[in-house]
Image 1 (cartoon, rainbow, N blue to C red):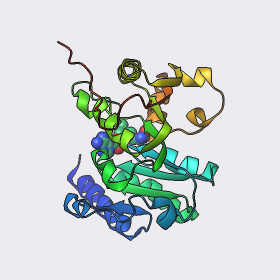
Image 2 (image 1 turned 90 degrees about the vertical axis):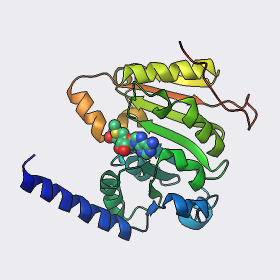
Image 3 (image 1 turned 90 degrees about the horizontal axis):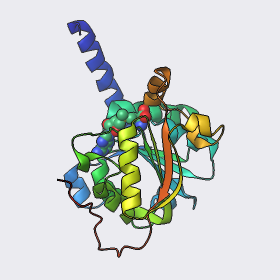
Length: 242
Ligand SMILES: C[S@@+](CC[C@H](N)C(=O)[O-])C[C@H]1O[C@@H](n2cnc3c(N)ncnc32)[C@H](O)[C@@H]1O
């Protein structure tokens, strides 16, 4: 990229980071701060949303299209978008500010830290929208047992996990995990736009999704629930492949 463009992009990002700091609906805590505890953990409904509606997380939300789109559609539910990248989160957070939405928040954090932000049974649903497929490093996949162990800590019993992805390998991997642990698979489709004409899975499209759709790539979608066959202290682990 030309030097001038690089500088302009860097300035733009700095402005977005600075504005993120001013949003009352955007949260960030350093690792050290999290060790002292997060003030909304276990209290999101009572102290932040000030209602008793269920909370849905969008993990790896990027610009937060699902978080914002569902918040506008379901006024009696709460939505929190989570991603590492502040410049992406800014887009969703800006819409929330401009439209005065009250049932939305964003957290800039690694998903690995979710248990620092949420207490047991605090989350009703999770959406994984176009997660990085991580073909080489299984433990980085957001549907790997390593992350499911974290989700299990914060989800209500029978809480739903939605996965939407262009990546067939990642989708098949998640199906394998669901079958291995005998989770309840409520629905799956290898081409959601052929199989469903309405509902959240087709009515909201993310930034990445629009690019894949332009290329004619079919979009995979599934809904599953972690069952309670495992004791709380049993870690989910897949057998190692040779
Ligand atoms: C391919 S993008 C998809 C973004 C958005 N969901 C969409 O569909 O447009 C994947 C996103 O996941 C985020 N991400 C990946 N691993 C993460 C992790 N461990 N913690 C937080 N965010 C993560 C990345 O920063 C990136 O924004």
